[in-house]
Amino acid sequence: MERRIIATKDGSRTVEVPELKVTYHSRHGAIEESRHVFLDAGLKDAFARFPEGPLSVFEMGFGTGLNALLTAIEARERRRFIQYVSIEAYPLPAAEAESLGYGDDLQERALFSALHAAPWDMETEIHPWFTLRKDIVLLEELQLPTRFHVIYYDAFAPAAQPHLWTEERFRQLYELLLPGGLLTTYCSKTVVRKAMMAAGFHVTKPPGPWGKREMVRAVKPRE
Image (cartoon, rainbow, N blue to C red; front, side, top):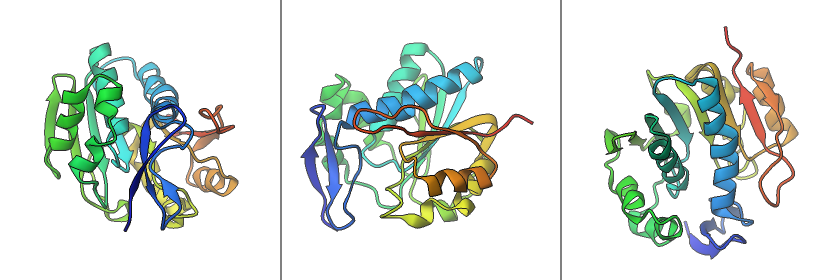
C-alpha cells in the first residue's frame, strides 16, 4: 500500500495513504493535533484524576510514534512514571518514521529514535520515567492483563476502518480502562458517540484542535 509524506499546516509532517484517503495525523497540524487531543484532553486530565502513583496509557495505533514521543517528554518533565502500551497492525519502517522529523521539530531526536528502536512485543525502558511496549496485533485479537488510566484512540477514521468504531470495540476498550479512566479521540461523529454511550461511557465533546470544531472524551464511571 502506497504511503507518502506530506506537510501539514503547522509545519510538521505526516503520512498519507492515498488508497484509503486517510492521513496518520491532521492535515491542519500533526503535532498540534496530537498535543490537543491526546495530551491536553487525555493525559493531563488523567494526571488530575489520578494524582498519585504510576500512570498507564494504552494507544490504539502506534503509527508514527508522535503520541508516544509527546507522552515520554511529558513524563520526564513531570517526573511521573508512565507505562505506555501501544498496538499497531502494520508498523511503519523506522527510517520512514524518522524521516518525518518529529525528533528534530521537538528537539528530541535521541528520544524519538529510541522509541522506534525499541523491540516489538516486549516492554522496554526508554528513560527512567517511561517504559514502552509495542505489540504487532489487531485490536480485536488483543488480550492484555493490564488496565489503563487513559486510552489514546488513534485509529484511522470510520470511513476507512468502520469495524474499529463499533459498540463491540468500545465495550472491549471500556473493559481495558480502570474506573474513572478516560478515552480520547479526534472523531466526534454521532454514530461513534452513540456506540461509546451504548458501551457504558459518559461522553463529552470538548473543542477540537485547529481545523476541527470538536473531539470526544469518553469516561468510564467510577464504581
